[in-house]
Image 1 (tube, chains in turn brown, purple):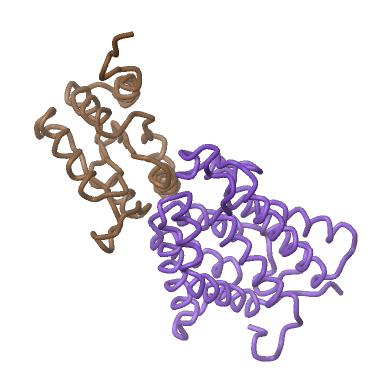
Image 2: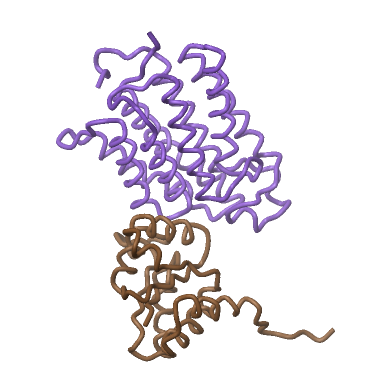
Length: 136
Length: 222
């Protein structure tokens, strides 16, 4: 079963997303938040080493899907992957899915035992989901 | 023999750059508040304080140029939460992998290091020239340095033209629209403001011209 990591500039957002996702999948899916800076929980920002530690903490050979908010979250997730050994790096994917909706969908599919690829496809499909259909 | 830059001079350059960023934190904050999330000043100040502390630690000297650049990179990656951390971090990390003689570089090696850094930075940020980013200061500077090298100019001249090109590139960001980062959310309203990343990147070349363009004195031969 794959693991999930949630990266946000805000520790509260990452932890909140993690709780929401856990509610969907139960305790079977390993997931970890990596929000804000490891050294100071009051700082907004993202932290490559913190992200790497989060990936390690949920590691299984089925791989890890990383969901991110934006900007430096993407770049620091990329750096975290570069610091991982090659055989682990190849089993990690940074998702293009929106963080909150993507996390929920990913948790459901991960809990069903889907592969890393399939979980990411499902999470990214959320990009096409409309929340509100406006009358013309 | 080609003029050379010592490990000590490179260290002094990065310390002067840290001093410059720390002293001008408010200028970066003001520029970033206009078009971004106002975090560039505080993030860069926090990162460069750590860099300065690390480079001035007498018990933990960097033994060679690659170690020096790697140390700066890892310090910035760990300490800077915004985009500047991974971007400057990648710049120095890639520069560290460029061939050098360990404790000296000549102009050709310096230009190649900066080219490695620039390529890494562009890869990381997916940014190109005229996206209103750090690239707009660094790319013209690296190209000017390479042109000076190709035409046989001295180290001091190469550093001076690189600084001039970085300055013009930084000033050019006032006239263009942001395509990257939070400033891109503003669209055309980002025009008329100088990019904070290009500004902090310009200082890199300004301080390089000051420290690396003058001959190594006995105190900084590293």
